[in-house]
Image (cartoon, rainbow, N blue to C red; front, top):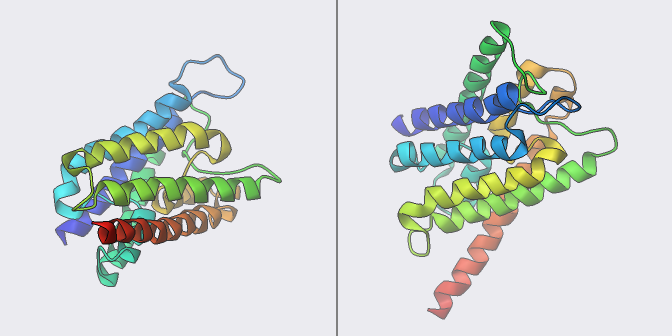
Length: 230
């Protein structure tokens, strides 16, 4: 049970810090820049992963993302029951993080462009959003699988490598979708945002999981080929 609770707490922190940076410190379009901007929000997400990796990594592996959990499962790194429970507790954690943000916004004010940090795409941009979320999740999960590999991975630097990759992904993808690459990160804010955030939510679940499946196949292929050469 400690593993599942750790995943819940880790995902809560990711949503609270990452989405919170957009809600309270993001730049409002058309206004004088007073916030942290795209790079600042990207760093908030990435640094949240780094912080949690070195906090709960030794307990649960610090997936805090159903896409990573799916990638690990499809790569043979965990069983189906564990994978399912990881995902459930990650979603619960995302909702908890969003609940805290909702309470903070409801009891005060915010200067960012959104009240929830939800993901979304404009009219006619669904294909662009789907491609972006799939490709960037593929890259992110591939790095996570490679960095945490017991034989070929980055060892104690794995958390740093994964967090820095998430920063890079956000810098490019925030202008497109707000960057999800994580269904649990999208579900919580969408529940509070409502409207188009709910109607578009399917994309931020399906696309990241699609990218994760692709990355697990690629990682199994290239790592197996490497083992044969050795």
